[in-house]
Amino acid sequence: MEREIDRLSVEAALARLPHDQRLAVSLVLVEGLAYKDAADVLEVPIGTLTSRLARGREALAAMLRPPQGDRS
Amino acid sequence: MSVSDETLMAYADGEVDAATRAIIEAAMRDDPQIRRRIEEHRALRETMQEAFSEVLQEPVPQRLIDAARGHQPARGHDAARTGNVVDLASARKAAADAPGRRRSWQPIAMAASVLLGVALGYLAWHGSNTWVKTNSRGELVAGAGLAEALSNQLSEDRSPGLVATTGLSFRAKTGDYCRTFSTGANASSGLACREDDGWKIKVLAQTPNATSNSSNFRPAASADAPAIRAAVEESIDGEPLDRAGEIAARQGGWAGSKR
Image (cartoon, rainbow over all chains, first blue to last red; front, side, top):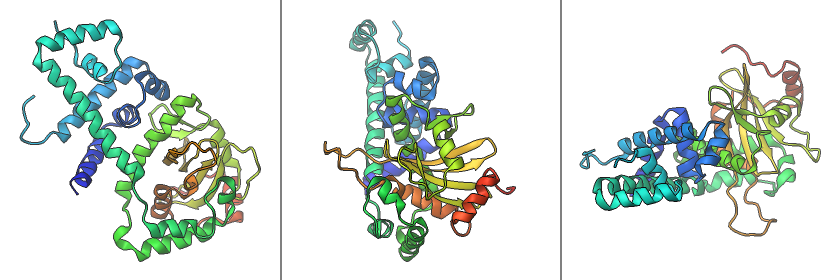
């Protein structure tokens, strides 16, 4: 049950990311592609992929962070 | 020295070269903050993988599976040959009979975005955009081969050697024409709708690879993917097109009515 809630909150958080970031995160973190492969798929330079991924991750982490662990 | 967060992220993902790794590992020893950041990156990665491995393996409500499989074996082109109209009708009925299990559009859209990742991952390995590519706005659209199939093939066309087969055509509530498709080659399938600038991919699913090494074994043929079936069910306006309806729509270039 706890897992179910987890999953839903992760999905919801992912869905709230901007499209570019969501794709980068999906490819690298969910799908497990190397940065280079993900960049090829999206037809962007690897630096672009990396920065989308970093921003996407940061946003996700902020959304998923438990309320008490609120220091950054 | 300071290391950028992007570099730490890349380190956590195993994406840095040996020299950078050495620098980061030295920095980690002195700086608990850096250790913590790397841990966070790793933890998030694990969270994502865990969360979505469950989506991809999620059991499909048995009644929908039964309705969808009904009278067909789950195998490639042969599976697709049976009447989709009948299948859809029984799938709908099954869904209507089990309202508690029926999925709403929203979670499907989310799950679909995950499935997109899976399919894109496939493309990364095979380096082809015959199939699906992103347009200038970053949206997924049909690549040349798939667009050709969607625009020209009738659903009953099952000649060998097709890039993709089309399954079911219908008019969506948005006024656009939409079609389901599948390709035998990579066990992927999806739903595409014809919009002003091409076939937009609405749902894309890849049959998860079987753990078995036997190349004979393919789990449920892709046209039956529950996310696709459910998306059709949610977006269809009226009944699927019959052959005459498909021919007429094809003649009109699949241009939808004004939204």
